[in-house]
Amino acid sequence: MQPVKIKLVDKKYLFIEWDDNSESKISLQKMRSLCPCATCLTQKENQSKNYIPLLLGSQITVKNIEVVGTYAIQITWQDGHNTGIYEYPFLKNLATDSIQA
Image (cartoon, rainbow, N blue to C red; front, side, top):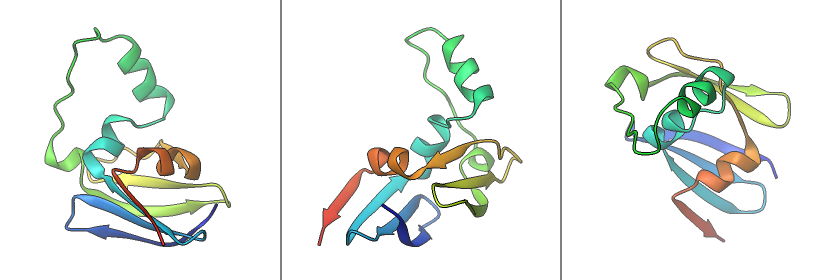
């Protein structure tokens, strides 16, 4: 499973067209709040189960997207955070809208 096209939509979503002809639309807010980097995972572990993260606009604004090998993308957010590697299966599971063509 590889992306054929990746683009930002309305500065709120990441749209991915996959090589299996499916499409995914993922909220940037959801992506940032579920960042898979070690720092974010540790911060989440130290919070109570009732914790609701409040994200600033700069934390959910994408500055740059880079492909990492053949398995993931790395996002640099406007606030400078860039250590999360979003593997393709993880992104597929995050999708709010997934359509099989």
